Figure: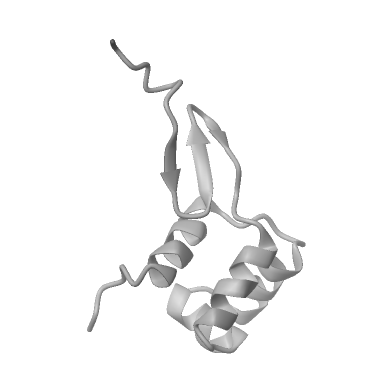
Length: 84
């Protein structure tokens, strides 16, 4: 039985992609992960390579969380980031 890649589901962290449809990470999820890491907004923003204000907008739900930030946050949460 062949599986159509556009109909199959691939779960990536906290959002699911079905073809071109993306359900982005919710602001509360981002906030909970940051708090689980016991980091301030400033330190977590630096870790993600974004400004403190941008992270604040994401957590407040004012700005949509881009997929690459959702993936980075998921990698941090799952301890997949590169150790230096």
